[in-house]
Length: 364
Image 1 (tube, rainbow, N blue to C red):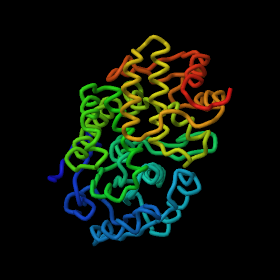
Image 2 (image 1 turned 90 degrees about the vertical axis):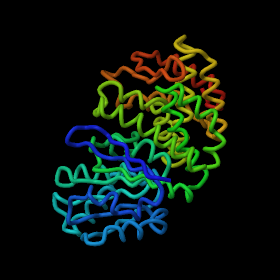
Image 3 (image 1 turned 180 degrees about the horizontal axis):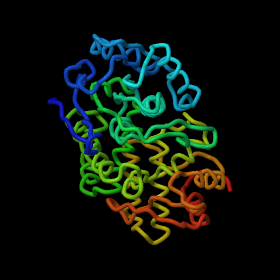
């Protein structure tokens, strides 16, 4: 497949998104993004044996080091960000250093956060190795770590110098991780591109089979959508909030169940359907669109009901969401497929009712 390059247009801070096969070993395509003498590759125990050597070979000539962290959402913490700082210090990294984030969303978020903090900000390059990271977290400059109180509560906006999405890495992705990434692909059709949603319905089988042409088209369409939104609203003052469709519910579910129990994409799938059903119960959207969303998520073998838990606890966790203003819940709901919107002041009783009607075993 011929590599494709898209741009995130942010003026002097614009950067490319490279999409294609065998890109990690193609340093000629991405080395120009590194303006440093020192390079630290941050990765995890799952990814390192597969791809670290390939990246390090492409970095010949740089003073480089690697940090291999444990794999899992539960390790996206301030303590593990501290390990990145320690390795940067040992490397003698100064303000012109670069961090490469080689892994999924956890590594990208954590390494990007460390890059934002080290000497008040150094360059970093995203090399996502999961579908979810390729279409979502690697693009847009959101970085951060989790606290016991909630997901991504500590973080910074810090744009990468480049995103290198090597689709070859998806061949080694476990089925559950791959399906979780498809949830974020579905999100782009759900919030702003009804034609893409129809395309996903028609091409679900090809995506499940990881057919390269369909997969590349889905990744490119998702990245184009996100790149456009980020260029128009980098710091989430308006339109960018729509990208969080399903995330307010989803982040609360991740926190309540313990980080790592639900994969992020699985939680988002449940959250999107909860938001769609809440929209229908509020008279804002046709129930038939929620049913189509449920059917597509089920086709991709994604969960559509919350695990057992306490609905009131979820609402309390949702109050910590970063989109809320002055203690008022702001949710991303929709008018139907392709038409998301920010809705403030949703009655918590309506949210509890939506959770109760979700078909789950959540106790009251």
